Length: 268
Ligand code: MF3
Ligand code: CO
Ligand code: CO
Image (cartoon, rainbow, N blue to C red):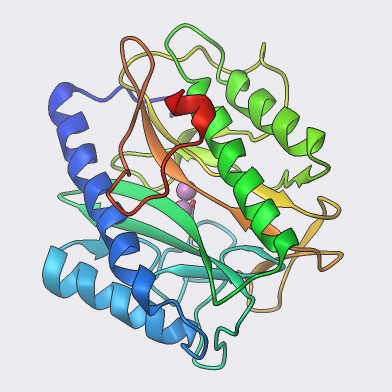
């Protein structure tokens, strides 16, 4: 398989899927409070997708090669969990936690994929700083997207911003092409050289979803086969948007009213 270029009609369907993905994240925000279980958040999101949006939660039963089927409809990754945290009745959010909720919907056969960080009560200054720098990292990567450049510009921009702030970039997981498939080509690395990778063309769609650690970059996967944590138990945060390469730059397909605004270096 190679990188698919989406037609105008397909892009319109990606816009719809992206909008619904953002709508789930907007909807769940007021429920992210101390005492709520991640399983309750999963059920709320599942029911919105299935009963209201008539969309399909892509993670549910998702089984890439070498993995057992993912058992839930969203991913919820708390504090030192890097990604793919599995919602559970036993995982109750507590004051000071930072949690990433990662939503992927399928609508009319097309995917939208986005994740945001949420503060549970009052997190530490350190947790806020990591969350904010990671948000800037994602936007540094997005802002580098335009036709004619190598995809490596994205990872190079992200790595530079993360490391100059004293943080590390997770290597084992990356962004990905997205469309009819959940995970398509290309792999979107969050580190590396600007001169590497395929040349971007209008109509390509992919995610940018940096996982940035306060400590060392190393990770391990828990016994559930899914939940990824930092080896040193340091905090890890992540943000994700689905991006379209346009004729002149980029379009973010997973925006909504409730998303935090882009950093000042984007909006001027
Ligand atoms: N949404 C994740 C991503 O950004 C993938 C989750 S796969 C799952 O690519 F099976 F864990 F849900
Ligand atoms: Co993704
Ligand atoms: Co995702």
